[in-house]
Image (cartoon, rainbow, N blue to C red; front, side, top):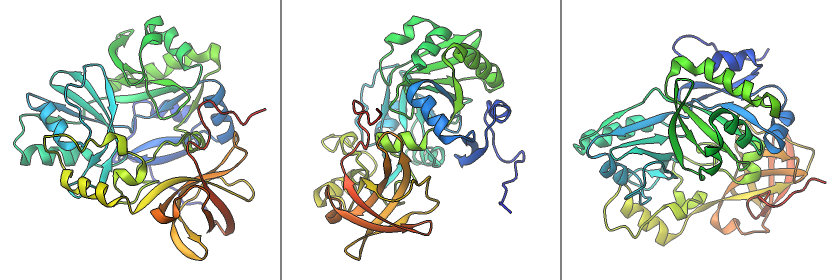
Length: 376
């Protein structure tokens, strides 16, 4: 009998939760101590909605850490190796957060809402606790909190039409990673041109959790002419597009250099930041491992519950972190975290998973390029 997870009041749910259930969510995961839908029962149909049309996602588990006060920019600059000095209001920036030994703790988008107010839109780890501790220890003049903010994503090539129907044509001019504070029939929102896919889209940051069901219904109604459907951050598309999943693709001691975040680590900064000396050392020594794209043989795979040990000529080379079957590439694909000496393009791999044996090869990323189509 399949195991079940109990849903009680202690387990947090999003403002959109009841609608995701009534619209057919079949699988949930736990993300930032919240239930988050990951499937509505037909993975290929959800993938096609994202690739060819438009999909709406409950990503309220993508929590915000708010930093507000006179020292807000000073603290933001200290906790991340990316240089965020003079980040403009209305702009979001993808950035690593590391500990004092240069280990990656999170990879949020930092949004500057006001001169002295920032949000960290975080992936799955307790960054609220980390930022609060750093702020108190450093005696920064800030308030650190988790605001009542819950993102709803609208993703896919037709997302722009749905969002324009809701807000007007001004959203067409919104540049990638920029955002605007607005409202929809009295519902307070931040509308950002962003999202965890390479198919284009927006995230509506709901700023009043009591209005979640109403917002869901409005998006669904506006999307009807474009055949919108419910979905979730898409496992297949993110592997095809080369999008990092913190925790799934990383080790607890992974550095930004191992997982392709080099360009967001600004070691030439004159000011200090957490992990600076360790990151300088990691950069000089070179990464011990690298996250690479792989293709491999066999009947189509769905996903892996555990990392798979990868070998080169019988020697353990690392682990296969995430796998799926790519409809556009028409092959099994995945990410592998390998010792650097085994991470060269063309390296042949052998591995076992889910009771099967596979042969694979390290290939360039993205596994499906933005201008490349493997569809007829």
